[in-house]
Image 1 (tube, rainbow, N blue to C red):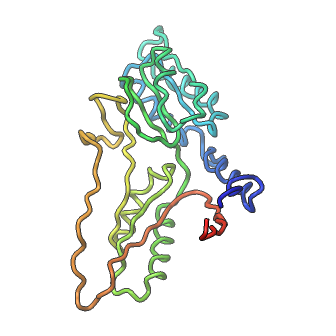
Image 2: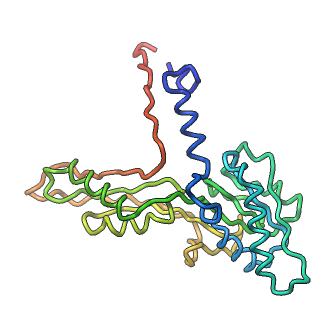
Image 3: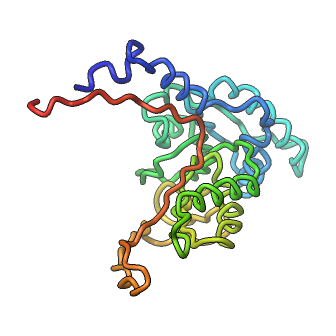
Length: 264
């Protein structure tokens, strides 16, 4: 029933493929140093005293790999406390197109890596090694005030008959993670907001010594979602409890899902 849904012969198959490619690339209006957080990477390299640094790019960002290496080499050279010492060796991991959201610690281990900088979306899957890992999601430009205003207006229009606005679940593309606390703070002036946060750890892929980029210690075990029963509705509002969910992300192409034969 789903044959051809994602093929180039599907009604919008080409649009889906192009949207996926554009979503993964660095926008031309976002400077290289901003998108790849070069200053934060340099700080992490200097903090660890790393001498062998592996850069892992997803396929969509490989076109920027050379420029990123050159820019990092220049920044690191300017931070050398002793000019006569050798700067850290930077190298780009290859053959990571399959499973690119996972840290390729096997390839990094071949070059005795001190630090892996993983660019793009990540699974945060636990690994078996002990090399330090830094995650850089990339950054796309967004105006938090404008974003919050648009969301608040959309929720208000959709819940015009409600006495109080429903709780809002705010999810987002990882390239907007840096701005979502700001957006959520503005929205909380109008409604309760539940914000999903990314761990974004600069840490060991296993074992201790892990610190998050926000300066907080991560939990010893993966966080768990605990569901509690909602309070009984008040007499003035007997509606079933509802929530609004908003996704802040890139281009979304609607798919015309074929009808499924009930007999099949």
